[in-house]
Image 1 (cartoon, rainbow, N blue to C red):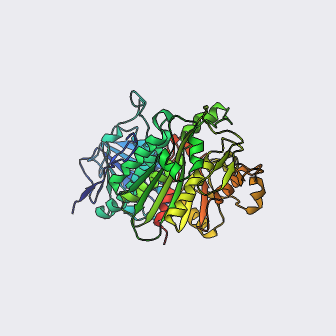
Image 2 (image 1 turned 180 degrees about the horizontal axis):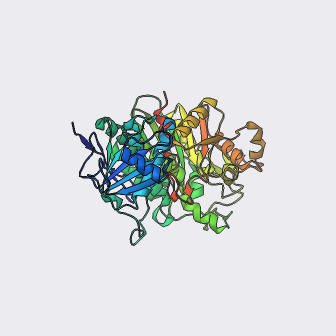
Image 3 (image 1 turned 60 degrees about the vertical axis):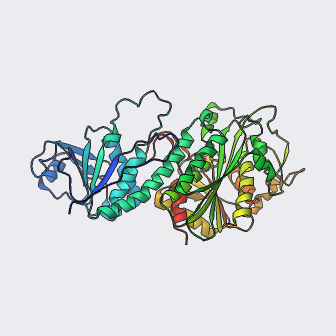
Length: 504
């Protein structure tokens, strides 16, 4: 039986700038295709004599990303104009993340190809993943790595193939099962794309109100969206968000997006959404630092991308995300060093540093999420501290928590999707660093900057299991690698989606 199931990716994104392939799953190769891609492995010999000879003559070992091409080949491939043997490494050690990275390598190969109708045959390798899972992950990785942000370009970069017109036909044993799995992964890819688009958008195009408008679009997926404007923030005594946003002509917002796919108590995700951060009167003075501050809302972007990913796949989970949005600017209205700010939790904070604004807006959001939703666990995600970058660079995101079980859950989820977390200390021994002479707390410690920032946030959480994830350094990439292009990474969407889907 010859079945073809189409899986063209429909992107829910800010600018619809991502590049997508026309992805299909079939149980029989399409002989009308112009290109055949045969997957080769480092520990599995190719089965066809002609391909064995080709591989031997070209020293093809099957290592990940290695490729060779054969034009107008002899039988049994004489129905194709081009045959490509593509290496996917040691298939006995395949994981979902390295299969997705292989798909990314494949996409980069295809951008240089003139082929439009492409068959991808995985039948000659015996992967530790089922062929349906392998095909779905290859397609997932190809889609994410082909992302580009071209909103402000007059034309696409020269030298890139038009992958919108490239049809990828994956040959699998069960096309409908591959399509089912790919639909789940496509929802996650859409969430990552949304987060990337938001993070790539310059501050001129992304104010707190603009961000809130994008969140409102998730209503079509069945997400309940609530937006607090300035009046609502004042009614809820959210003095911290209001203080940070006071210096801007574009006022702050609090956005709540709720996907209720089950009747369990919700999981809560809180995202930092500083749409631009000048540092306030503690002005950022390094050019390479301040230009990256268009990404200071990457935590909120990841939170919104996560709820979009869960809603699109109709996940049987109850998750609420709360995003604190503000622009930290300098003006005659801006909050000042030495000011005392009253938070929604009733805790007063002395402003030691106006550039420690993220923890301020997060304080009100954490309090609101716990009080109004009574979640069974809370996780915040934020580009919070330079100290985290000093400690971990972009190799890991930092995770801080007093709850060992929650840390284990998050670290396991991160390992599965290759968004890894490294635990850093969160200890009450550091509380004296947050002691203020004139208020309940000060908004900065004197040392251990990443940990004292996490400890500050902990003061606005009651008994709910809580973890703080610091993604400073992870939100932007300086170059393309694996499934991640240069620019916004969408870091955290896969991690938090995986965490939410795997909770009992």
